[in-house]
Image (cartoon, rainbow, N blue to C red; front, side):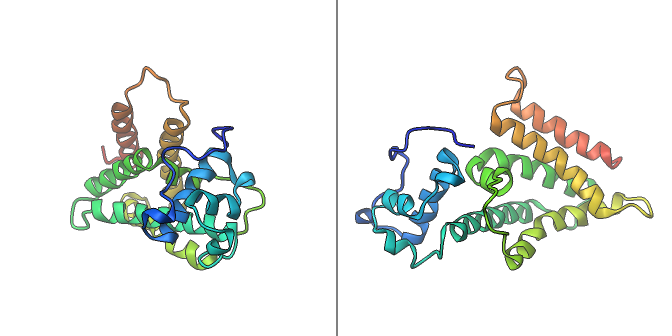
Length: 207
């Protein structure tokens, strides 16, 4: 998933500690950029600390190891997505409107937060330790919100988890194709979002 071979710090690197700011925040930002640019295999605590301008020892005051650092990034992304979805949701609105709002918000979140989205859903390092159970339970509220929204459309006996994940596949496919640059360049991104939302609604007869 590496996107660049240059390991030098770019102009978008977090400021050094001399510039002030929160150290944990700077470390997370530096780790996210290094992870996206060079991949999990080349992520190191020393390199992240170097980008921020602190000693390698300092990073261990906040993160036990690089997996803890990656897990913190995933958790942060999931929290951001949850905030976006919960803000867009209109609990008292008709089910079709709720579903439309959530689908569009998911697509817009992915486009607006490509680095977070890649870390959350497109990172597949073989040696990354399992995501902590307590963090996973909190992250599940995103998919559970979708499940709550699609439940009114289901026929008796339909598996809400299965149907919800099928919907997620549609949305995730649209986001991942866009972020990877594999979408037909002749297609307008906003019209593609409109079509994806429309198809999602048709899945449930809610168009």
